[in-house]
Image 1: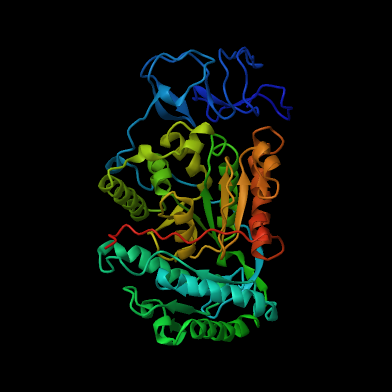
Image 2: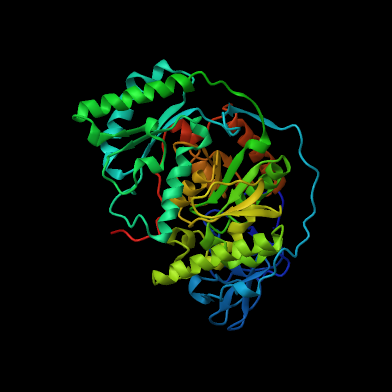
Amino acid sequence: MTGDKIVNEIPLYITVHSNDNVAIIVNPGGLKRGTEFPCGLKLIEFVPQGHKVALRDLEPDEPIIRYGEVIGYAEASIQKGSWIKESLIALPTAPILDELSLATRKVDSPAPLEGYTFEGYRNSDGTAGIKNILGITTSVQCVTGVLDYAVEKIKKTILPQYPNVHDIVALNHAYGCGVAINAPEAKIPIRTIQNIATHPNFGGEVLVVGLGCEKLQPERLSDQSNILSLQNQPGFNSMVNEIIKMAEERLEKLNERQRESIPVKDLVVGLQCGGSDAFSGVTANPALGYAADLLVRAGATVLFSEVTEVRDAIHLLTERAVNKEVGRSLIKEMRWYDQYLEKGDADRSANPSPGNKKGGLSNVVEKSLGSVVKSGTSPISGVVPPGEKATEKGLLFAATPASDFVCGTLQLAAGMHLQVFATGRGTPYNLSMAPVIKVSTRNSLKEEWNDLIDINAGTIATGEATIEDVGWELFHFILDVASGKKQTWADQWGISNDLSLFNPAPIT
């Protein structure tokens, strides 16, 4: 970075590694042609905020280096001080999976952080929740309309009688019928629904609403005492009344629950980034990574995900695996996704999105290198396949697509209590059954979305705070949200997105 605490008039750029031959512009609105930096670099054209400037002349086919890694090759001669547009960068090949180093990096083990707790709800199976919610699972999309009607009625007329219950949530999805239920990959959406139905924030009170004739029979989700099949009811009012009756039985039990001090080792935190920009890898994601290391040191389980945003940086991760078996599991998930994309006649160039590119990310390699930073520096102790529940402690890779909604759904199935979400472009995304803490990559996003962004990491770019400062702020905020002491903006507004199942199996 070219300065310490600054004002917007002073031109600023950021490099990450001493080998970088490009930098990103910090100043809001970008910098005009002729702008000169204290180091002597002079812009020969306008460069937008977050976009890359050449720090020296680059010849055709010469590597373009950011984060100390090759993000592409120059398509033509590039002059020092010019804007390196997407069209000037040729995409490099992805790391060859069979040539990766496994469990070769020796990671120092910092002293454990002892004594940290959160105020949660202890469940009978030994797990803990951070919310006290009645979740109602659906076995098929057909029942959604009736269930939503009943849930709205319960919220208005009955839920206020149970002040210790935070919410009632309908777990709606588009699966259950018209699907190849016995196809090999159908196991992914089925186990996702099964694991979400027993999420720790639901306190063990399971209720399933099904239709009766669907392919995903409700008995695969719970035992008969927890199931209501609408085809067994004599009409709409009977359906609604029976849902209300079964819900009240469970609300009475949930209302008796009280918060108690629980060790951080029982906390599961998911990490994600969406609406990413060029600042994601230098502000918000490093702060998430620092907080992740703190959580792991305190004994928590931390999930990072998004296969397509890990694939091009996988060589930096397999060497951090605790053993070769975990390293091979990482490779297995990368290989499966390579084949999945190939079947769909797609490839990794489908990522990034137009908004990512507007924010300065030129290709998926640059995006991946910034994305994996949120995993911190801890050893990777396990891999969670899509839809499975996490069973190990420490830093885990939960294999999911990069889609915000699909990733969030799969992290919920893995047992995530809350999610920390880094964003540069901004998104109101939230989950009804788990809080989503929003962390902005830029000061201007926090200023524009002050009532949606919870933590601002943009101060790292301007020198007003360090990665460590924001990491500790985030660590304490996570524990406060888990304890019910603080509420995220999205939870305060009561907004949320639908579940989005990952279903690679055929639809019939």
